[in-house]
Amino acid sequence: MKKQGLKGAAIDDQVGASQVMLVSDYPYVWEFHPADHIPGTDTLTDKQKAAILGDNAARVLGIKA
Image (cartoon, rainbow, N blue to C red; front, top):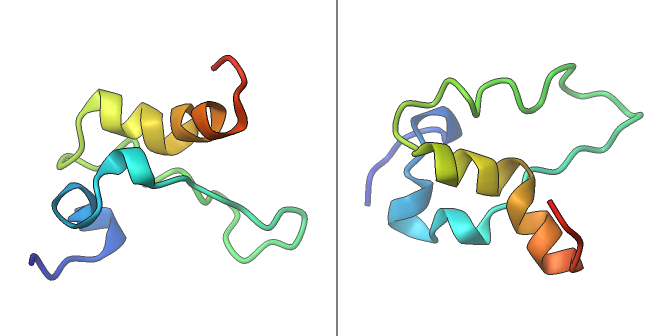
């Protein structure tokens, strides 16, 4: 198992990007831009990034992305 932070994105090796959703506790701000690091992560494909940023949630909730 790779020992990397979320920014390093060992996500696919551990659980698969299809099992990850980005969440926020807005309006209680711990991080002002919680999703900004996902697009810049070079170890995830564009499809995996889209899944984490909204496609997985849409699938789980049964709504169109």
